Image (cartoon, rainbow, N blue to C red; front, side, top):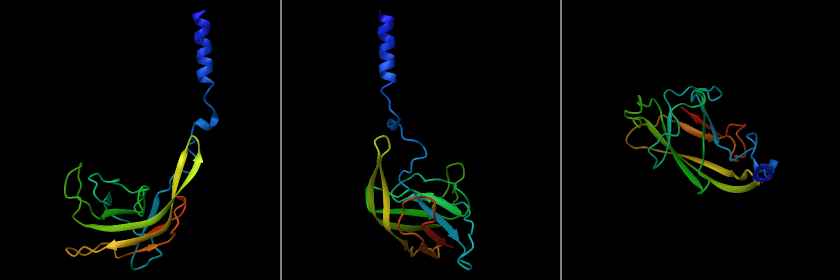
Length: 168
């Protein structure tokens, strides 16, 4: 009798999951900001960034030590406020987790409006970003390695397009 009860319990619990209880990996979730690094002398040509590190303001951990390529970076924006500040460090001196990572850093403040969109019961909500603006914050102590920035797409609804160009 116990054997049948256990089998029935397993069938009941195993059969209670429905397809929409699992969020497929292919489902579009909150998109990240896609950045392309370009040559200031010839803006149509991508330009590699050497030893790039990116860190959010007021955080000690770097978002990543390696961009997806030497000319493209993808970073998240905060969805619980309407701005995110990042430090972009060129030729970072981090070696095995130590060194002076902020020797050549520039700050960009991103501001935007957000919109939460219901995706599904399993995937919950995603945030899309609108009216993106970026401001290069000047550092009086050293010259900026970032010469200028241009918003290519001010609505961030996917990661299939470049949203921001950084010229250096």
